[in-house]
Image 1 (cartoon, rainbow over the protein chains, first blue to last red):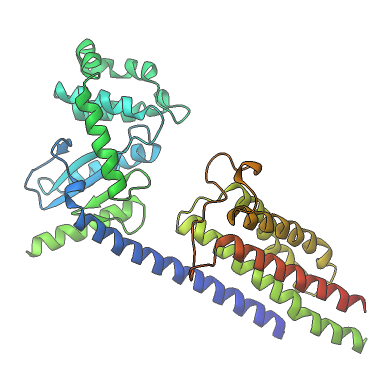
Image 2: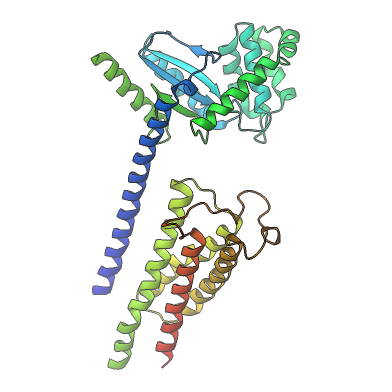
Length: 218
Length: 145
């Protein structure tokens, strides 16, 4: 039947045009974002940002991170796995984008724990217990405390340190860089300054591998 | 018998064209919202509620052609047109934003896109709903002749 052919052909054309449109738009956006980060490279990494791994590693992952963000929690094991699979070759820097309500207070907890040299343990404990202290997409410090007990932190000192205006300044600076780099959601990754072409752990793995190969060829 | 088949072949393209318009509008709305990441405002959502089902209802009316599909599709296109016109007036500043239900989230009066210097999303929506409604009216009157 001719009408059916017209209908199916139109549907296929529209679907293909839609898919092509998505592709075109995303590749253009990635290009723009790469340009934006290279023009604002100082906004990508700040001196104050917590960093893990070899300082002279050829691949540098910058993660814009919100401790109360579910996707950041889900991504963390992948990031860890990628780093463990390539020892000494990857450096991870955490930048803060506390978009969730009350998440800035949790950032202060992390920064205060960093002063006691327990940053990464605390980060892992915070993420592990996230469903318990952020049940309604907003952070509740009173619900978080019990989950930090096993870490041997000096809690009185930690709570005192949290009042430091330095931490507020760090968060303000990070949020300003979030705007400069046009980070809309968390987690947002930049691998050697390049944003993910599309969101997902496989995409991160691929981009890291790509950068490792480029670095090895040099 | 012959005459009714003739009418059917002349009506099919009309319903088909309105389906194409609804599908293009739906894909466009999904593209703006999901790919470009523009958050739809409240009025946009109401227009989506009217536009998205047209894709399914109209395609169901195409095989085999059922002119009664106008009865189900036309009210949606008319309501959609009403909301789209209202949205356009809000966006153009004819109606003040405070009178609209958009007090939270994305304000409806904010223009997110302006193509060729004048073409906005509400304009496209008005055009799409108006064209679909017109096509369906023509279908209805041609069929009842």
